[in-house]
Image (cartoon, rainbow, N blue to C red; front, top):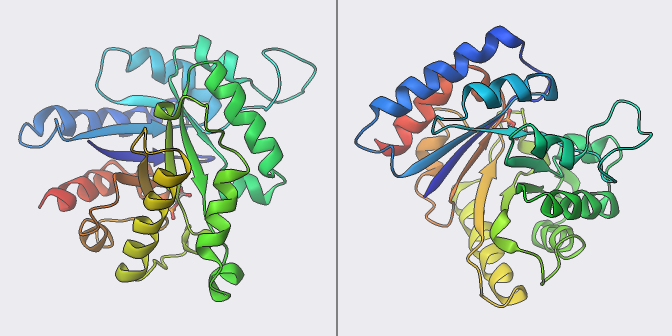
Amino acid sequence: MKYFIGNWKMFGIPASIKIIDRINNFLVRDKKNNKKYKIIIAPPHTLLQDFSNKFKTKKISICAQNCFQKGDFGAYTGFVSAFMIKKIGINHIIIGHSENRASGENDVIIKEKIFTALKNNLNIIFCIGENKNEKRKKLTLRVLKKQITNVLKKNYNLKKIIIAYEPVWSIGTGKVPKLRELQKTAFLLKKFLKSRFGGKYNFKLLYGGSVDNKSIRNFKLIKELDGFLIGGASKSSKKFIDIIRNFYK
Ligand code: PGA
């Protein structure tokens, strides 16, 4: 099963539901391939309740973009908990996105977020990735392993966790890793996950960072990848659908 996950970030108003409607229409009609992939869209918190109600009976899943790290309720102005997200019918959440890391989320906080999301039985898209400087110093794999080991415990319900590898320098820049480089990273990452977590569970690994209808033509050659986390291109139904089309072409 491949995953195509759209991360809307700070985008969307109630009328933006039409974007997901069009994607859903494509999905329903794509009889040839639609059993091979899953579409998940992450709109902002303001739209979660409405969209999750509207897509409850559909194959597309609606996903949260983040949650607060502590508690079900509490004196945390402006934040929402994993518990609150689960209670409105949401089953997926993105945690550890580099944009959130950039505004202060560290591994300790991300660990707490994953813990509370698991407690509320949410499926987690856990984002990791090296920055430009770390890449230049050839520290990519070391950084990724650290981001994983600082956060994931061996006794967690790992089936609830999908890893999204997103090089920070690639997000929103149009720059993508070289095919061979990405293949190697994906291969070594999966190997590491298997050895670290005892091979009980085959982790799903996504790639994210400037995925569009062109770059997907190369990414699809990497068999280690189980799907894609798509930012900019997920705000347009056409661009998002073209990514899926080109993936199966
Ligand atoms: P991008 O974003 O596709 O716009 O590069 C990806 C992401 O931030 O998840």
